[in-house]
Image 1: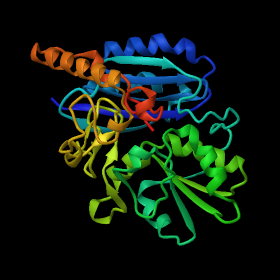
Image 2: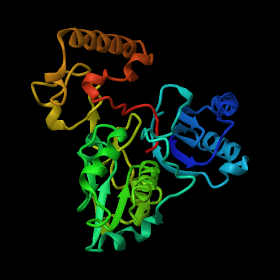
Image 3: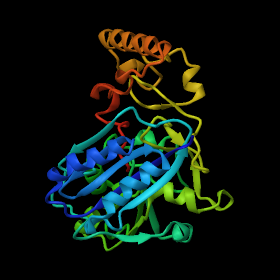
Image 4: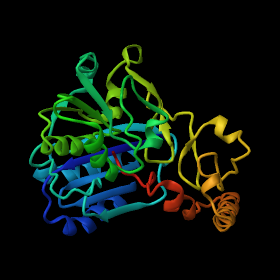
Length: 321
């Protein structure tokens, strides 16, 4: 069977978000879903995978809440289950910027539908900004987009202060994987005095779903937060694997490098590892392979890399972005 992978989010006031956790976790488990959903006072965000029936059941349950009736979600298909477990987490923010005053429920930029995005990009006065992290931008982005070279979304406000100006950049458009980061980013820019700010509704995933490849302004693949690592323009599994030491997407060329050892190191992290870390990763990989030989899933295979190797970035775990 094909599994449906559904990335969803909505900025909406949820003062009772703590009370929503257990009922949401129960309905997801009963529907056979796996993945991660985040709940905070500012809304909901996450990615889940399961059967068509299971996904529809959970989306219908969520939309019974009038606050979530227009919940944003995107779908793709995958031949295997994309996650190991089902988790619902309580957070301060559903996407972490670290600026408490920013509230997309109060002020947000102008949404641009996927079918209208190419026309906006043709504007010579436009400043186009990719709001994703460096490892995401590295494997694909829109033509002409600025890569802020950040390792976490927390760094974005400082990058804006240093590189954008309302007078020199009067028209700014932003995008991200699923629409959530750029939505919050537009709220921040408006608070900083920028007046004409746009963002891609539904993010890159909606664009790839909507715009024919013959007309695309997208180059490369799109990083996703599940075991597929990346998807191509047809939203099929892409060409990248992942280093399970630092979680960076890796190409065939990376895996041919002497720096690559499966589960232990890659060219992006070898020079940042200690002997103790390499030994720990090697033992973890040994346990993963033993579990696979027994036909079992090894939960440790999805553990986050140490902050010293991942630039304090978590790039697994089912968050839409």
